[in-house]
Image (tube, rainbow over all chains, first blue to last red; front, side, top):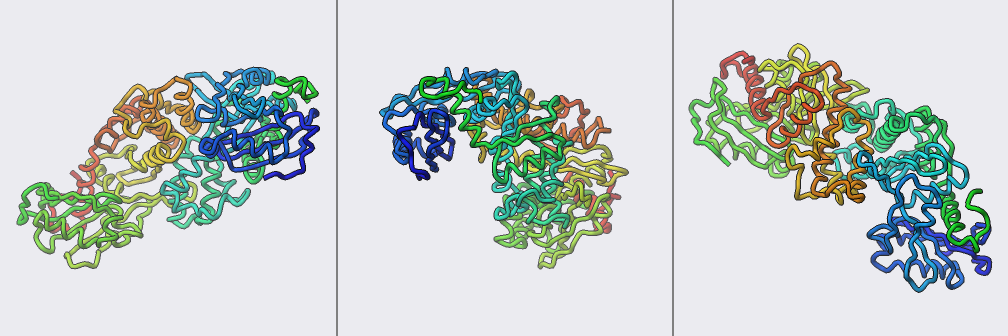
Length: 316
Length: 316
């Protein structure tokens, strides 16, 4: 699992992004330079079975972190069913709010803290996030202050205000694609072997962000269109993906109408799809790397929790 | 399976609605009066394994139908993977169009015909129906000529024009409820034991047909709202159902903006939910029984195919 030889004597902190199905640890010096990293598939679900402390200890050893090195964790390890619950911080949430509310975990590995998630306590639009708030803190540390789009199993759209997470919405776009293409009649219209295949014509044509309300009718039309010879099954995944992504962007546009620029936090093929879709919907897009934003956010919070161990003010 | 003693000598025709998972047969006299019926779960999927002719023969015997009695079938038995494909008739489709294109099935049970489905060959809005067209013909025979809402696993919204099926849309509302509540994160927010529980406050509050585009954001909020204490899991099914039904009605309203009246073809709890939702969205609702519409449609087509065996012109 270890990738680089550690420079343990310069190590100031270990940063961990502990997701539902993935684990990523970085060793950083006091300037925030990454010295080593260790990755694995021991996400929250797996760790809950084998022991969180066991998994963390294994990765700390893999990068030869010095004993007792402070560890700062974000993500699902802080969920109710995680290692140690870090209760949500309500919006509006600034980096300081998160760092102050990090919870200390009782364990034999020294100072281990887990950052809280963020909640939106509006009865009309209740919402929660866990892990994304740390990426957002990383963006805020780098000066982002507009609308942010974070695609994924549950896409997040976030409105910043004066550097704080002010409001957000969650779209189950990734998960909808998964359950529709595997468990509904659309499994006959989507070839699981062929994913969206990049920014294809079928993807772009299916977006139609101007009519998000009809997306629920258009998904059946994927099947009907193939039965009637208007479309090929090999384009089914791209068309379903385009329909759902277009519906998300169209709905987000109606929820956050005053924004023309958006920061897209994504990487890999998903980033390419969303950038093309956002541009087609008329947005001016700025790209931000998701993993980089996570590390920046962990460092910004780490500087507040352990100012004596890390240089800098948290804003770069 | 047989319910009533047959009056086989008066029997003029056997009418069959053969769905994906259900089978219903009625024996009718030349006036169209129902003499007997036989129901079962041998839908198309099951019959494809045990033999369509076997299933039909068993139900004809159950009502003691005279040998060689003409049989008229609608529904999935006419699909490509059914008993004998009855190719789609394209919109606009009148009762005459359907009756003329009924396909004769080669079998030992005498004259057996299957009515075609209907297709919408618009590349922008391709769509298909099979079985609903017969219900629609039943409505047309009784004079319905406005907008029709047919809730179900795949809800259909149909615009009539001069007694013909002119245009239609399909919403995967029922299937979306099923796959989301069983295969997505919402399985934690929906108690499978408690269905929508009738027209509840949670159902009505979740409708919000004025903003169908935000439905994809509101379904995650069902989960978040429960995590934050705004809602109970026991209301989860009602809230998910309301969100999806409201999105369907809102989208249909935007696709068929000129209609204020709608004929709702449904029965049982689903009919109560949709009637309440349609009224809340501002529609004037006329109810029509789904099964009655199927029988009327089969009789209307039967009169055209076998005028010598059935009295009446097809319009009642």
